[in-house]
Length: 123
Image (cartoon, rainbow, N blue to C red; front, side, top):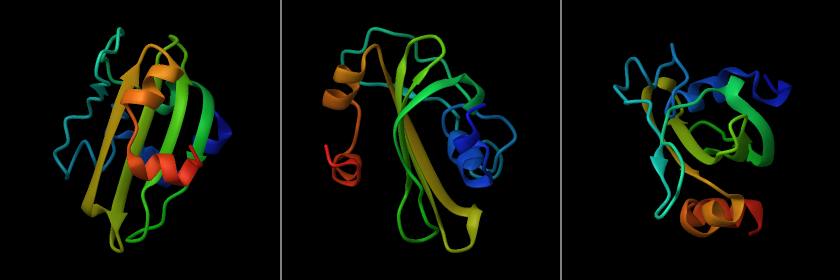
C-alpha cells in the first residue's frame, strides 16, 4: 500500500469503493461500489487502497469541513476519483462518499470528477 493511504480516514473513505471492514460498508450501509464515468470503457469492479498504483492528486479532508479527495491509477490501469466525508462525530454517524472509474486520466477529468475536486486541485 502507498504510505500516504495508510491512514484511518483514507481507509474509511475507500470503504465507499470497496475497502472491506469500514464504517461505510458497515453502519452506513453503502454498497462499496464505484460508478463508471459517462462513456468509460473499463470495469466497474470495486477496489481498495492496496490496488492503488499511483496518486495523481490528493487532498485530505477534515471532519465537518471538507471531503477527502483523491485521483489516481489502479494496478490494473483504471483511473479513479474518490470523494468522501463525515461530520464532526466521525465516520460512524453522518458520512458519505462516492467513487468513479475511467479508462484514462483525460476521460476521468472530463467526465468523472466534481466541481469541488476541480477547484481543490486547481484543474
